Image 1 (cartoon, rainbow, N blue to C red):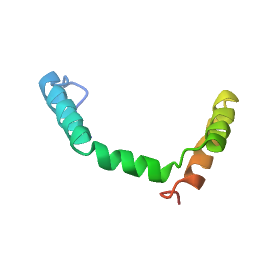
Image 2 (cartoon, rainbow, N blue to C red; image 1 turned 90 degrees about the vertical axis):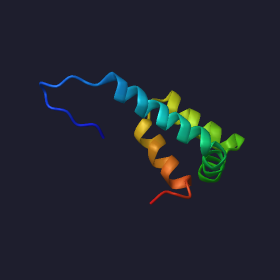
Image 3 (cartoon, one colour; image 1 turned 180 degrees about the vertical axis):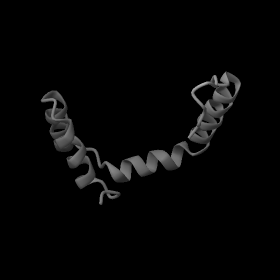
Image 4 (tube, helix red, strand yellow; image 1 turned 120 degrees about the horizontal axis):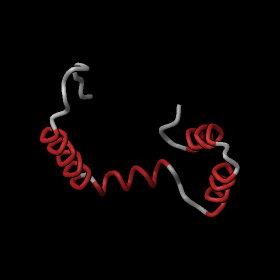
Length: 75
């Protein structure tokens, strides 16, 4: 995480470089990320309906808790 003093300005060149590095890493690992996403959040019609009901109802804490419960990475 970038840290700067209150009196310092952000170095936009460094921010741009970091952004590109992140984008390249995501692109390089896209297949693995996709696989982990599918393994963590097994999508089916019922699960989509549950998630949508929480989202539409504005119950975001319940949505997060539910996502953690169904995730293989949940605690």
